[in-house]
Image 1 (cartoon, rainbow, N blue to C red):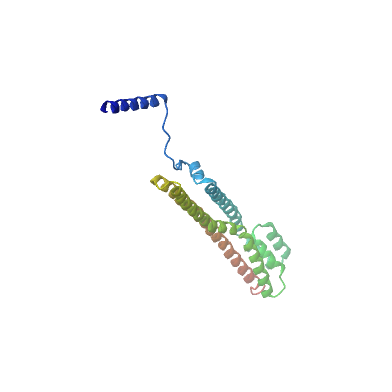
Image 2: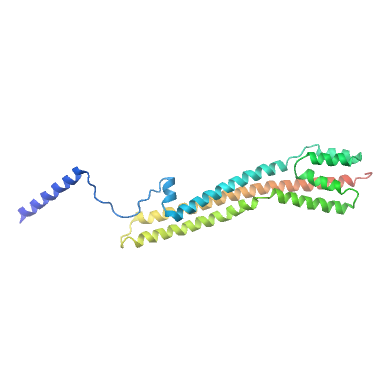
Length: 245
């Protein structure tokens, strides 16, 4: 009996050597095989749905950057004004050169010259009417400066929610892997879903924070332009109400 068992053991060893020499590798255990250590693996590791979410977050980030740069350029130009602009307006008004003052406003770009031109066009009417006309023109200019800011704000609000959807999807992946494991749960199966879950949350929050910073930075520049318009309006009203004017 012992002799038969020894022969069977030798035969098994010989078979193993043949398999190794032939280059045959036994099949690996079933389970998640996605490589999430690379950017492409992160995008494709959670399936088509997770890939779609990651692409959507990338698109939102690019939109936030685009609109932020576009608004920065526009608002920065809006805040620029020739230092001698108001002094020149004062000289023209004091000398009765109303048309020259209008031409100076039209030659300048930006919201402040347009608001001042609106006030000049109302000269001869009550001060209250001039002030109201300039105030309305100022609100129009601020609205123009705030154009597309709501897109950045929308990205700041949407991105974390999209990341949360990916978080829920990661939990679903975990339970799906557990359900298909026939009662044998491995750390690899659980960690795969957790990796997707945490990466999705981090991606959504990162895009949201970037958009949030962009929004408030550009909004602060718009507030600065608004204050400049208010100061210029008050200076113009004081100018036309000076004693002897």
